[in-house]
Image 1 (cartoon, rainbow, N blue to C red):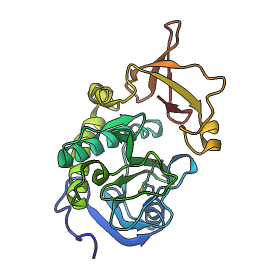
Image 2: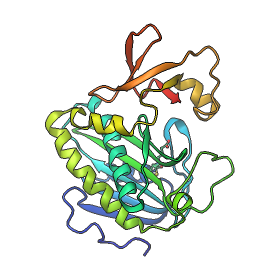
Image 3: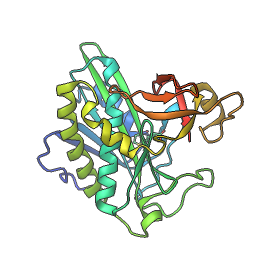
Length: 269
Ligand code: BTN
């Protein structure tokens, strides 16, 4: 057994752990398990994914032993449009977990890529799944932890190992992440917005008070990534933070402010 069956102990949020040595995608597993009646607080964990999925139809490299590939099933008592904010909360928890074990200072590329020293360490794919009488959210988190090498095409990928030269216990990081997330989740359910996390999030925002290019999602998807997308016809804007509902707030050169939601654009800084 690669993961210890009961390493989450008696956790206040993660009530059930389902582990796989290998699966296609923990998000896909989560959706299938939901249809079979598995519910709130179930964490699906795989040592390896054969078809790890990223945002905008991309794949997520998921070799055995190196990374953390997991999906948490939640049934938040929230309006559907509020569920995307869980992604930003998960990003903060991922940062905290990685920083606490490694001593690094991780940052966030809005909305939910975790970056350190120019390398992407974590990706998060949150999916909203309406099912007849109850709405589910699956928070899929992929973390590069002990990876020593990456496929050549992943020029921007890094791991805790590649940055610190040390190997880490994945169970410790997972426990840390969801314990931190649990506290934030309870606070979020009370306010229904990100107001209490906004400052902390902006402090971690890598392009805060910097010029950014807002790239239409279709252009990013066609190019494969925001880094490869053409910037033709796009003028930079100035990032001034996030709104209480997690939208990116930017300023035009004429000083007028506007906000964009995560589905509309991807970003290059
Ligand atoms: C991204 O960077 O575009 C998001 C990547 C999300 C990857 C995780 S790994 C666990 C879960 N299962 C998946 O297939 N995807 C997410």
